[in-house]
Image (cartoon, rainbow, N blue to C red; front, side, top):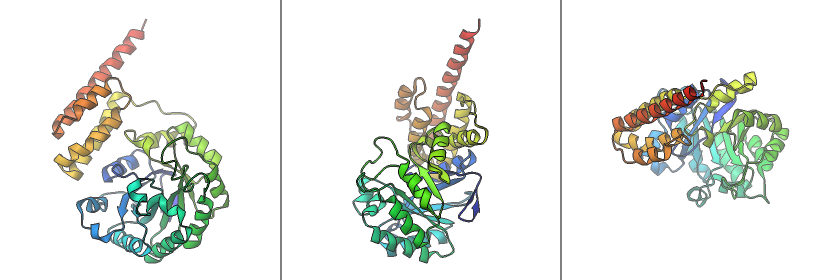
Amino acid sequence: MDFCGFSLRNNLFVAPMAGVTDRPFRQLAKRLGAGLAVSEMVTSNSLLYGSAKTRRRADHAGESEPVVVQIAGADPRMLAQAARFNVDNGAQIIDINMGCPAKKVCNVMAGSALMQDEALIARILKAVVKAVPETPVTLKCRTGWNRARKNAPAIARIAEDSGVRALSIHGRTRADQYAGEAEYDTIAAVKARAGIPVIANGDIDSPEKARRVLDYTKADGLMIGRAAQGRPWIFQEIEYFLQHEKKLPPMNPGEILAFLHTHLQAIYAFYGADTGVKIARKHIAWYTRGLTGSAAFRQRMNTLTAAAAQQQAADDFFARLAAHSTHDKEALVP
C-alpha cells in the first residue's frame, strides 16, 4: 500500500494507545504484520518536552519507517511547534489526535473534545500543515461529539481542504467512550466522499471482522488498537486472511511465549529493569488473558519485582499450559 509517500507492507495500522504503543510494542507489531504503527500521543506543551516520558515517546532509534508521531493539544501555535519538534527528532508523519475521549484530555479541549469546534479544527490543521510542509500530516477523530452530532463528514472536508493527507475514524462518538459497538455507517459515508485515504477503526478484533469492515466501508485500511494488546500477531492473522481467505492456525503456548519473551526483553532494554518490570505487568496480563489458570498467575506476577523472576514465572506458566494441552490431546487418542 502507498500511504503518504511511503510503501507499506499492507493497509493494517496500529492505533495509538497511551501507555501501550511505545517503541517496543510498535516494533513487535510491525514485525508481526502491521504495515504502520502510530506512537503514543505526545503533548504539544513545550514545557514538557524535556520530561522523561516525552523523551521516551520521541525515541525512535532503530524503528522501521515510516515513523509516525501523534501530537495532542488545543492551541494551533503550540501544535505547530510540537509538529516541528517531532519532525526534527525523527518523525516522518505527524498525526493529530482528535479521537481520545479521556477526561483529562478533553477537559483541556484536546482530543475528541475538539470535535465541538470546527472553526478551531480548521485553524489547527492549517497551522500544523504549514509548520511542516515537507512532512505528511494525518488526522484521527471519532464519528462526532455525540450521537446527535456526528460531524465526521464535515471534519473530513475541513481536513482535506487544510492539506491533511489521510484520516482515520473510530466508529464511536466522544460521548460513547468505548461503550457499545462501533458503527461503520459514518465511516462509509466519509469514504464515499473523501479524496484522501480513510482508515476504519473500532472493534476490529478478528480476521473475519476485518474483512467485513473493509467490504462495508470501502475504507483504504484498518486501524487496530485494543485487540492487539497481548496479541500483536493479530496483524499477521488478518493479513493472511485477507490474502488467502482462510485462517492461520491458532498460536500454541510455545509460540505465544516466544513473542512474549521478545517483547519483555525489548521493554527491559527500553525502560530499564526497574521501570520495565512495572510496565511489563500489564502486557503479561494481556498475553495470558483467558488462558487456563491466568487469574492466579497474574496475581502472583504483580508481586514480582525482578525481570528474571518475571521471565521465569512466564516460562513456568506456559510450560504448565503446554503440558496440559499435550495431555488433553493424548486423552483424545483412542
